[in-house]
Length: 176
Image (cartoon, rainbow, N blue to C red; front, side, top):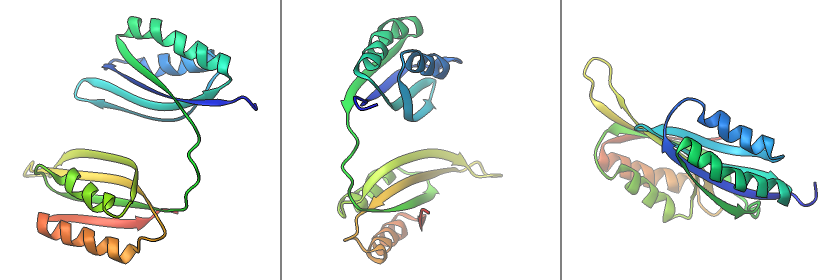
């Protein structure tokens, strides 16, 4: 399809069964294609971000359908035009950071990354409780896009210094 366009959709509202089915049915029923998505329940709230594609007519049908679907399911939708990103060379790595929970971990880790122009492709965080003690442990799991000019050794060193000072553990591994 030569006139294929891309859109990004976000949705937010109280969680309940059937939300993913209703949203995916709207996209499919409108003649569009769901290409990439992330969905989560945070507290009692459902949060979604996804990218879909289709002809201009199909995309208009999706957008029009979100008005009634949003009212029916009490969801707030935001839809934005997007494009395929320009290809930029990078190496894909996975970074995991964990340790006793304390404020500022995400900010400090992402500061190390941003200073080196490392792009965060995805980032998930959660609190896990250690067996036996129930001690809250913070876990950060992220996929990184590391530009060729950043040496992995230098990035490891910076992360090691940060994690040592914050009493955190980390793993940095190439994604294949």
